[in-house]
Length: 121
Image (tube, rainbow, N blue to C red):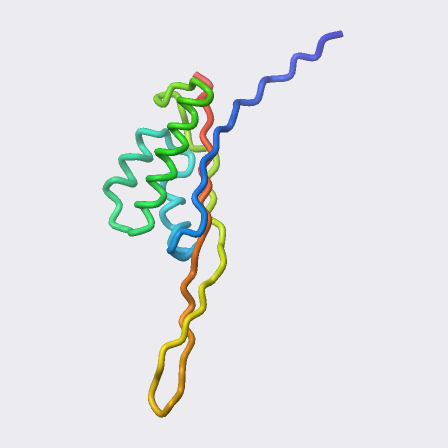
């Protein structure tokens, strides 16, 4: 008896850690490209006015290069199946204020992960 389970597509990942933008701002951009093809995602990120689009675009380029070099996959057949922007550590700083007081400044970071898989054409 042979059980031929459908083969799950290979997911190729790339990530950037400790990116100096908040996770919330990164997720706003990630929601724009999740599920899109690589060409569509690159076009959206290239014309996005949000600063978080720059590191997301770099991680996407890295994931495409990983898929091409390490697994021999064609970039035109790839789709973004996994785009996560998780919180990283917060860098804590203080700013002097009036009358000898100080207020805290939270410099937030995030970890960006993009997973690509071939489309089932």
